[in-house]
Image 1 (cartoon, rainbow, N blue to C red):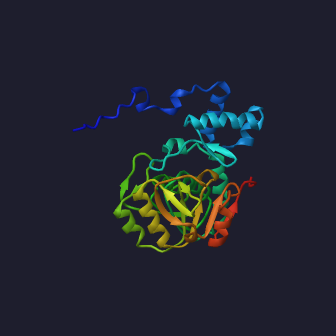
Image 2: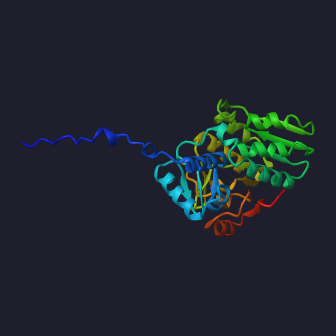
Image 3: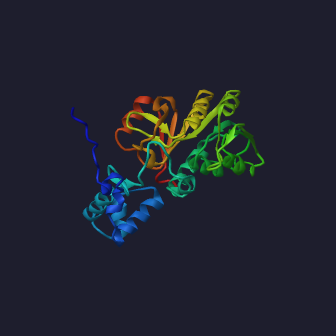
Amino acid sequence: MARASACRVPCAHRDADPSAAMTPNPRQALLLDEVRARGSVSVEALAEKFGVTLQTVRRDVKLLADAALLARFHGGVRVPSSTTENIAYRQRRHINREAKQRIARAVAAAVPPGCSLVINIGTTTEAIAHELLRHKGLRVITNNLNVAAILSDNPECEVIVAGGIVRSRDRGIVGEATIDFIRQFKVDIGLIGISAIEGDGSLRDFDYREVKVARAIIEHSREIWLAADHSKFNRPAMVELARLDEIDMLFTDAAPPAPFPELLAAAGVGCVTCEDSP
């Protein structure tokens, strides 16, 4: 009787890391540092930054992407992403910081005095909280201890903190107790961030517990405002949170790439682009 023989994989290839096969040259190393600092950046901006041609940048980007050190998208490049795990919180605080600040100013300018809000977990929503420090008569419910700490410096703002389990990595609050708490309210504006917006019109994140809380926010808000910088478009993530037709306003820092303008129009979503805001 014939015996099946085990398939032997050479040790050198079994757990090969694509990035181990490449040592970036000095320009490529600087390009990597620039993308990691900004989160995502256009090819044109990289060419201008380093004083080289578009062709040179595209060649470098292809090599770095083939080595899994960067991820390409139409017209630009970003840090590689996983569908199962988000970038570390401390790193996310610095990625696209200027873009998040522009978004935050645009959102704050649109928030009327004397309204009620729920603000969820995320570095963009924390930037928005900073911009709400001069608002008056706000009542803010949050499952984000960072947002609560920021807004507690505004004596004209009442801050209500949801109960639940505190995540040490970012001070977000999640769990069934958080969902039950949110369900007691009906607020004027649910202000949410997101990790990914995919080309099928789905809004996605990485932690299903965080998504369940965000779902409760959507269901208990009269309007949903989404704050997301340009790097969130066409980014993959594992857990579906909502669809574009479930939100009312999108605040972003650059014109969304195709196919999102058509998707937003079909869903009736207002889009505020603040790329030129001061």
